[in-house]
Length: 298
Picture (cartoon, rainbow, N blue to C red):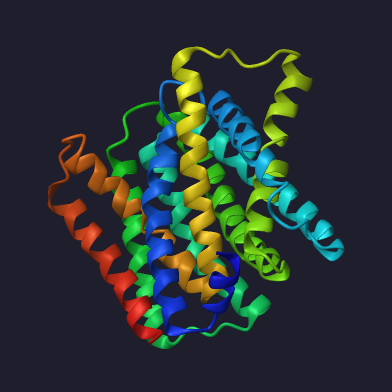
């Protein structure tokens, strides 16, 4: 399968597959974000999910090629970036509403990622694509502004929550760009994916053990959270990483941030929560921006 994926790089078929993978990542990322803001506190949720996906990765380490020598320092940098991302994300979920924090974090990252990909990979967005980025980011931040205006819980901590969400968005742009660089530096993309999940999955469980000197409580709902969250993370993160190897990093990153749109759709269709005309208009703006970005790159 690795050889087949590598053979699609730079082809029209690869571009189409990258589009599908980025959209899959968007849908799953909306679910993954909600899992960390459920009945379990964000720190415990992150610890259990990370530990579970590290365990899942362990047997696959014997099935994929070992990372090349020059890749290990790149892994180390990626590990540091992801620890910073997860700390800022869990902190933002601890002090702010998911409906406010999530759109802010996801809304500011696409433009940063496009700029970073331009420096690192020489990618160039056309003026039409930049218009699409503006539509998508505007729609996402509009969602956050609308939710912020209607937020009634703990408004005193909203400035801190928004600040942490902005920091999280910066880390999202940083890890998306850097991870794309690392997965392109490895000969086998699945080497990066499984070794990344193993190494990254150790950080929060080890930190928990050092600070609390005990393992997290494995009640049934916590164990289920770990399994569901880990599987979701594999398909979400794995999809976006494969997309960045097959096609432009910036385009994949922009499409991935339509996760805000999918989270709203899930709330509307599954949870039966009202959307209203303003949110419908913002959803349409996000979808339009994604279409413009994809169409403008053809």
